[in-house]
Length: 92
Image (tube, rainbow, N blue to C red; front, side):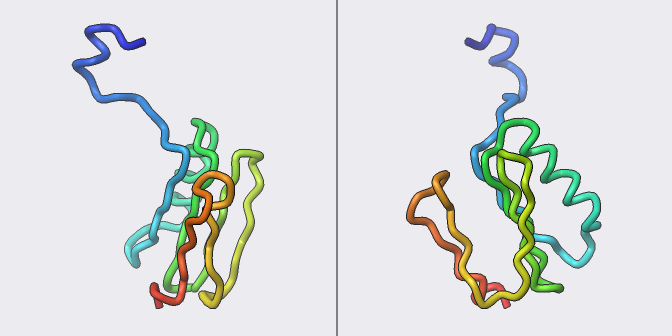
């Protein structure tokens, strides 16, 4: 339950699912650190998509990180977003 003071401030919440799309000016190392923070704070699934290298880093609540190379696959929302898929070919 939020106090009256808490209601006047920025809400400190963490989503179950996060997607980060790396731009050319972003630092990959910093983005990876950011994704780990999301997981540490309670996110169950996080995708870091690097269009330049056609790589996806999939972060899960069990602290595992899967690296997917190439954009010929689809990403699954797994049990966090059942039925949701992202066709990576649309990013190319």
